[in-house]
Image (cartoon, rainbow, N blue to C red; front, side, top):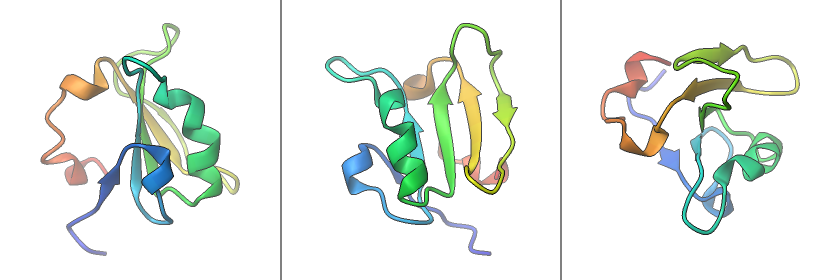
Length: 86
């Protein structure tokens, strides 16, 4: 497996094997595009936490969905080294 991965936001640019960031923006909430990212074959999804989740919560991958990791304030984190997570 390659140490380098590609990350993408918005979902329009997503292709199979990429990581998708899903968080609320000024005009659009990227979390609404999670189903589209799953259909397009996202390798993993990094999403802003819903209120009921804690920072770093993981929804394991299954046959119909990639792994989804939830963080608070996704857009403010340094993702430079997140390949160590995945």
